Length: 361
Image 1 (cartoon, rainbow, N blue to C red):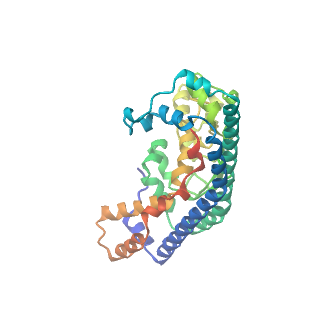
Image 2 (cartoon, rainbow, N blue to C red):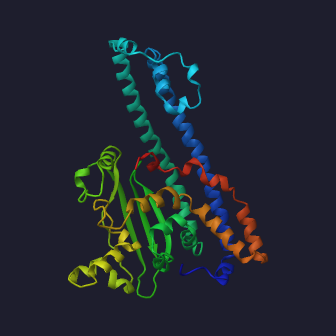
Image 3 (cartoon, rainbow, N blue to C red):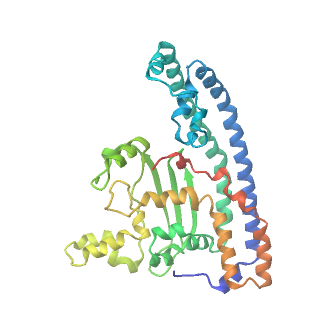
């Protein structure tokens, strides 16, 4: 992988500015932990009366829990068959199909709708109170040299999406900012430093959940089950955004190649270009097999893991780098003390749980 951090670069970062920034990021994680507790208390407060209402409704439904537990395969794995007091017969089930049961089931359906609305309400509350904290974190990260370079170079899942040759430009990412628009939609902004043949630029791409499969332009490679899931649970989409490609990629830039589609190397170069990180910014989610592969996977990777857990990845990367060097330098030892001050388990708390985790892919 190109552009690995040199020992001199690493040592130059072991300074008071870096140490202070890491301590500030630790404070941010503590704030997010407290917000997580606050959000959970808020969720409990507004869901408790709804669950109490559901409890009263269920009490009016004959054999409700008997029916649920008898057909729950995971529950059956824990309980001997002899513990079950007989299977429900068809006559018993039919005898329960009465007006009381029908009304109770309708009431339960209303309860589920209430819980869905509460879930949206809680997520909006979480977004509202975490946004200023993430804005503060963004400012702190901007002061840490090579922060995102360090994070992305060692992230194995990210490397699965990006060709190795692209990393010398990925290394130019100065900062990343994610904005949650609602429970499922979000925006990612990438700020690139300039390099030879590549200008300084900021690129913003928005991702939205869609359930209208008629918008899909190519479905031949999708199964009926996949299409059914996409219509029920939704699929990620995005509008193409402009990004200036590196000059050295002119020969594989799909936009430039369109000017001469009869060239004998057109298909080869076009396919190579469509696999680059820069082609991802043109990804729509509507052209399966005809655009950047697994663009939704890369978007979700940023939203679910890379962005919320960036500090954890950075600290782990720094430790790996120090281990490779032997970590004998006194400056490194000082920095390790700063790193050891972080509670790594706290960096994977529920405040980092993505809204999209509720989406079934």
